[in-house]
Image 1 (cartoon, rainbow, N blue to C red):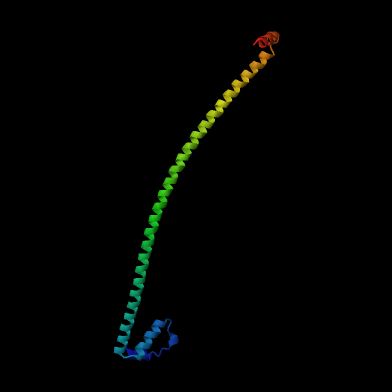
Image 2: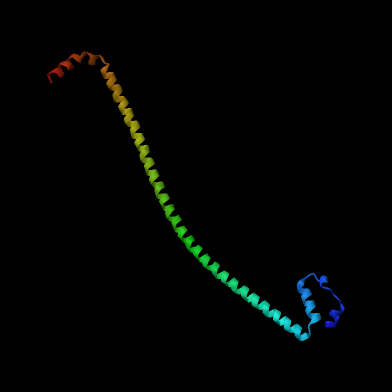
Amino acid sequence: MKEFIVALDAKNDDFYDEFIAAAHHRITTLSAEEYLFSLKDRVLKELEFFQAKSSALQQEVETLTDSFAEQKDENAILHNQLHEIEERVTEQEKNIRQLTDKNNNMHHEITIKQQEFNEIYQHHKNLISSLSWKLTKPLRVVRRFFK
C-alpha cells in the first residue's frame, strides 16, 4: 500500500485538506509500526482534547443549571410580587369605585340641597315682595321695639 501511495507522487499542494496531507506524509515517510504508533498517539491526543472539552461542557452545564435554578427562584419571587401587586390594584380599584359612588351620591345630594335652597330663597323673595309683608312691616318694627 505504501508503494502505491508513493507511486502517486502527490505534492502537498495537491491536497484540499491539511489532515489528508498530514496522513499522506505519515504514510509515505513512516514505517507501519511508526504509522500505527502515530495514529495511536493522535487518537490519544484527540481523546484527551475531547475529554477536556467534555469536562468543560459538563462544568458549563452545571453552571447553566445553577443559573437556571436561580432564575427560576427569582421568577417565582417576581411572580409572587406580581400577585401581591395585582391584589393591591384590585383593592385600590374597589376603593376607587366606592369613593366614586360616594362622590356621585354627594353630588346628587348637593344638587338636591341646591334645589331646596333655590326654592326656599324664591319663597323668601316672594314673601318679602308680597303686599302682606309690606303691610305688616310696621307691626314687625313695633314688635322688635318691645322685645
